[in-house]
Image (cartoon, rainbow, N blue to C red; front, side):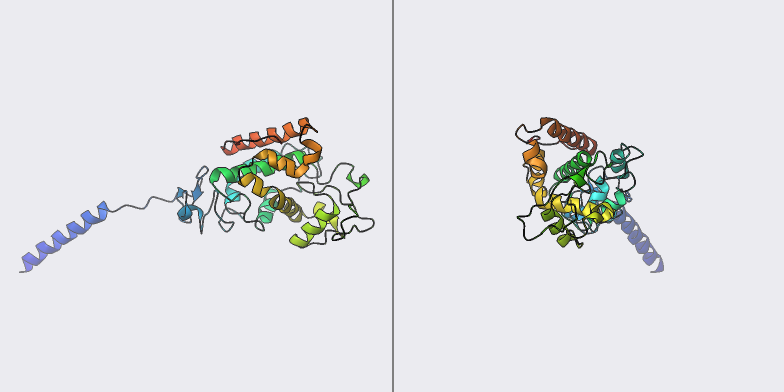
Length: 277
């Protein structure tokens, strides 16, 4: 009986080993670096909710709650190399040289979880490429914090009674998208949490608030256009339409399009249709 039991035990152990070896084995974590795909909370690359949903660590995650240093999926696309590739083209004497930083941008993105996470991987990359194309054009590769000679220009719409101009304050272009006009400063400040009418200067002093104003304008005026497939040209029209579109200034339109196409190429995505406004 003892010998029989021993034989049965050996047979059972062999069966267990055979069954275990036939089961799918976990693949070692890839530590992200998924090249356009999402990196799941377990470290695997792929698409869909299991990879891009809750706990997504890098890539075009569905929410901003993933890892990667803040900004979730955006952080995986806007790498140090991508951001610095733009900023490093600014001259050493530029005011924005050390003002605009990737960390400030990613900090600001936390307040706008829909940015760079809406739709497919390609849509997310196009939105990010489009945003930075306009930022590059508006700031001269992150050189300018304030509009050149902006203080000499009148950006006060006195017909806007909701956000009336404060005497002595200038609502000229500041920040990554050069937010202008009293009604934009007032509305952005109300949304973000600063006094835009009485303290517009903070947009050129606090780099996180500065990026938030750019993202605020983008999400309210450009986000739906690029994510719905209207094309990059629709974002040009939203930002500076009357001054550039319909033949008003084809050179600046071409400059914006050039940056956009270049950034799409860097991010490995087709720029899509309707590039010009």
